[in-house]
Length: 172
Image 1 (cartoon, rainbow, N blue to C red):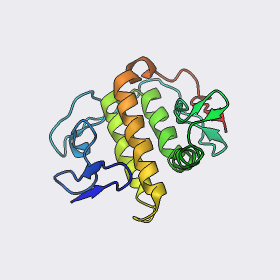
Image 2 (cartoon, rainbow, N blue to C red):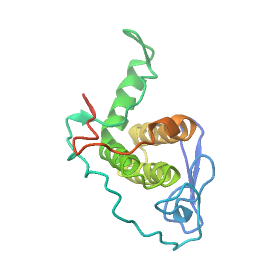
Image 3 (cartoon, rainbow, N blue to C red):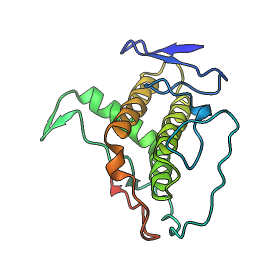
Image 4 (tube, rainbow, N blue to C red):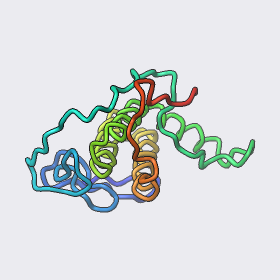
């Protein structure tokens, strides 16, 4: 099964187990396991051990955990008010998923695992929008762009959490 974004012509393809979409770089989320930066066969389990990393700060809905650059603004000039609004709605819609991604990075569960989990959980969250709602596609685009950015520059942000006040997020 596939879904095609009618606004951007992007096709989202189901993974073989039909549980979620493949990532933009064609990774099946069902084959990525915790604790690694590689894929493994379905059902592989990697036990987690006590790493001495402090627990995460609690989730706060008044904070922005996505750490995204603002692609639709140039200074005070808004390139597209509609796109700016839709992107902001998508960002808020997947904010808890972004928090979980920050916690995953801070817990050192595997960069690939955390990034693929962001994609899978983000797409799942976006699916709560009705199929005909343009926000569904803006949300998919936000998740896809976030995933591609993480795979490109995420390595420098893949660091252990050093205190239980992390992640902090930014005020909206």
